[in-house]
Length: 407
Image (tube, rainbow, N blue to C red; front, side, top):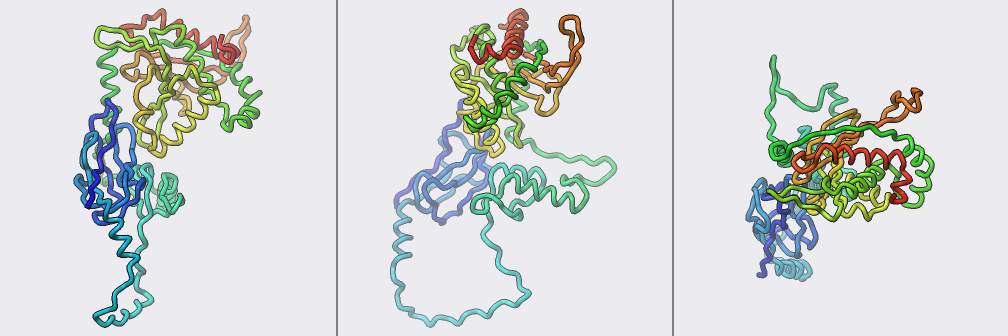
């Protein structure tokens, strides 16, 4: 017997523990190297834990729902059991010492057929099913090898709601119904971080407006050629990221952070992009954003958004960051005061671009305007720098040639 320990992967410094969701294998079942054994939920992501060796799952040390820490042993795999099982499978059967019993009679026509092996369920589908009180095992999977996806669950929810003409969430009956639902781990973490931010920073928000017409015209002119060459659509996010980086280079204090009584100036630009997912808000990081092209930024943001929906973002992608951007405009927000993502010192809020009357050269004209909001830590960022920072972003967007030419 050769035992290999199955351990919780190394979690980031900001994550102290995680929760085991559901074991995919039972004790005594064969496992293949690279096969997912269990999903592990942290306050940021759902991680898949693959088997590091092939063999047989010899022991489960930590059961479903257990809270675990980095490098904690949760199971054991017997790697030598593979050879034993394989040998038994290939060996010729010995002559039967006991007469073989006659086959059992066929079941009646009305008897139910044995249920098939349940299809695998993706982490995001499992979360969606739990939120809507749906048994994921009853949902027909459309993914590879019958994998049940989030879209499959949402489709089942919509079908159920349409058939019953009622909301899919079942509330208690009575004159004044209430329902108590425990927060998910990620929702608890979001609450802790928001309270931490407001308790430990002197948050102030300043605003400005930007005429998006030049960016819109530039995008409309080159979007087809851009997509044909780079294989990704040219959105507005890359322009905001580039404009923010240019402003951060001019005002490095906005890219700094507080550590006790020290100010840490970061000589790099790791931009967090806030993304709303089924599990809650996540902020993956665009590392060294100053070195990325518009195409690089669009590709990475699209990838982040897709994997956020699947719960596939890694701990490394969600850790760190020197400045953040949040776009409430995709949900129709007109104005907001975003909360800083600690230990960062500022966050840029983007909102919906709408046609509005503005004054230009003594004339009232209609322009696509966007309100920008900068929330900053007033302990180290003064109002003068915050206002000038937003003006720098405004100028970069109203004269996008500066973004492209790095002027």
